[in-house]
Length: 111
Image 1: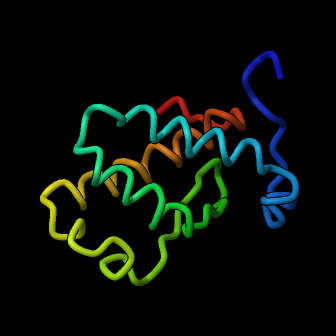
Image 2: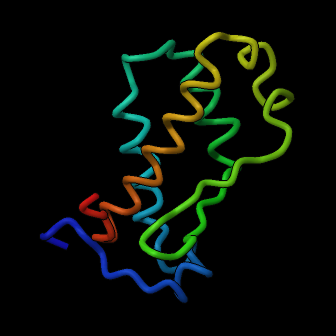
Image 3: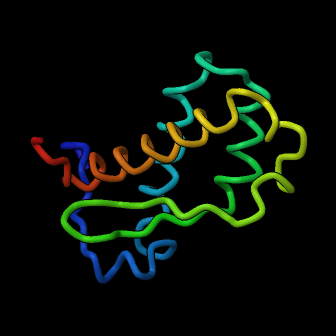
């Protein structure tokens, strides 16, 4: 893996936690680290531990990924959901995770 990318197989991604666990962990961790220090740490940690831990990435085709979040976000994070940074942090983390997955699997688009 010296080139920084892992060969991607959409069929294997159906069983992602078996075939791509390390890559998923890297994508989530990298996205978190990119935002660390830029936002309120309580908001970032709550989203990471209580929302993203239960999220699921899906390959949607054409080199794109989507992070599906659990339904009960407010219940999971409690009062953090009322914080002004909650929505922007959640949105940016998901976007960065999706981009990190593209990068790790060498699926970045040039556009």
